[in-house]
Amino acid sequence: MTNTGPFGRGRLVQAARVGALALIAILSACSSTLIGPSGGTVPQGPAQAVPAGTDPEDAIIGRREHPRIVASYGGVYENRRAEIMVARIVSKLLAAANQPDSTYTVTILDSAQVNAFALPGGFIYVTRGILALANDEAELAAVLAHEIAHVVLRHAQARSDRVKTSELVDKVITGVFGGDVDTDQGAARSRVSLAAFSQAQELQADVEGIKIAGRAGYDPHAAARFLSAMGRFSAYLDGADSTDQSADFLSTHPSTPDRIQKAIEAARSFGAPGIGATNKPGYLASIDGLRFGDSPSQGAIVGQSFIHPELKFIFTVPSRYALQNSQGAVVGVAGDGEAVRFDSAEVPRTMALTDYLNSGWIAGLDPASVKSESHNGIDMASGQAVTDQWNFRVTAVRYEGEVYRFIFAARTDSAAFAQAAAETIASFRPATSDDLRKVRTIEIHIVTAQPGDSANTLAAKMTGVTDRMELFNILNNRFDGDPIVAGEQYKVVVLR
Image (cartoon, rainbow, N blue to C red; front, side, top):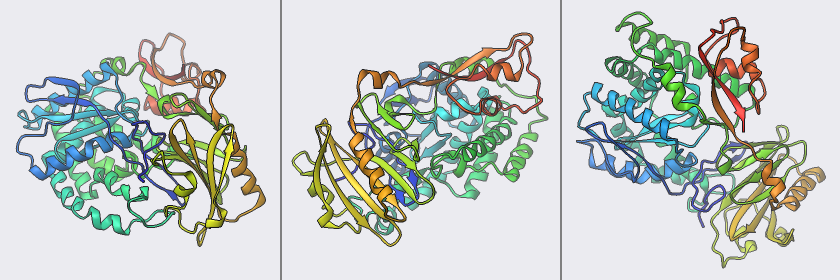
């Protein structure tokens, strides 16, 4: 039995972690944009082209991991205007990087994370979270040039050597439910780590990327601007009690003052700030209407409930739990000592849920505690487990042919903990039309400042988010006191 996740049906998404609940789901399915030697693009094709001269082993690794990486970030985000813009930028960068005969696979991932990375074999990824944070083409070009630099500098080949040891790494990675690599999602972390380079490689790619972007005609100082914006956004997420950022660009590409200074110094070789193209109006037009935050296709949190519009189910947690949707799982935290995780698992239709719980993936399971039950006409099975530091209450749910899991963890077992688990499990039911109407999406909208507008009046246009002024400033990379210029365009987020 392998975990498919979250919420099955061919969708591959990334799991997050909360305390001891650290697991990652890997599946398959993808589409992307191929950028060829002439700069032409072939959108939505299968990922199969790699740069000329690529090491055969790199090509194998890239092709194998591409669908898994796409899946781990929620699938491909389809936005024609953004795809065309990204393809155009990459074509210019390839020419500037002396890679005119290369073919790259560039994919926009349907993830709110601020992330970008490259895999062996010429596979480059940016999330819609990156697109939302950048403010002009030069900033996005800085990110893409950085990733192209990793390929040009053969960092992918160096990383390939680490991949050869993945089987050994899998043998020593264990999740909270035991060490069976075949059934433990934690073993899949080694695949996601393909996106990580060493600190020295990152700094080297910074400098080379700035050179590539500068030669392509973009503002070379955009890299430092965007590093600063990422640092501010990272601090904002930390203050908002964000979900796990362990696989995020903000952690793998830290925006330290020293790194920003090095980016400034590299850019100065081209000249003072103000040189090079930015095309802010064109960039903002391309991201107008871009989805912001969680995708409804991955479910939505409405109050204390999680609603999945596509799979049409709902459940509710007690008021003391703070729910977060992290693509691969829904997690809820109640203080430092109690948490719940909801995810999905691939279980043969012929296997009883009680047999699944007893199949060995739960460390410390008490077999005598495993029992069948039913709520709202839905078959379930529950059990309890105890490890050195945690008490677990685990329930498997079979709904519409798929199996989902509730994993409750607490430092100390108690009647309140048991009641929270029981109430949540009993709340799982089919979503009604009224439930589904509660699910809304948030989008980036581009507004033009009018005479008399201020940061306050523009931020007031934002809906569906808290800390509107802080987020408005971060998304537009401005600071308190910076003037609002009539006729200029700004990003706001709006609930739709």
